Length: 103
Image (cartoon, rainbow, N blue to C red; front, top):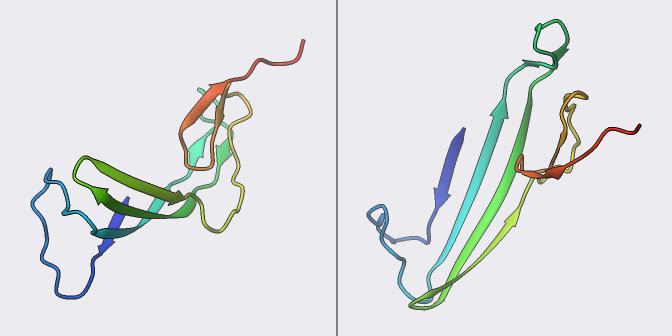
């Protein structure tokens, strides 16, 4: 996964773990790449790889506050998921619940 961070012109890099100053805006583009994988434990059914682009923005309105916005999978394209999985996967790749097979 590659992360590219863009800051305003003339702005110096901040040490990791430090909070940005009030009023600062931060923009990030994240490219997520997943290679080919298998659907089953026996590795007989292949699924293709995929790439998604996420855009993130952060604004610091007060010393102890930050507002974040994220556009996950900007292209909106849907990708193959294993049919054997029992978890629902959101577009950003996070698990968001458990599904149950129909009886």
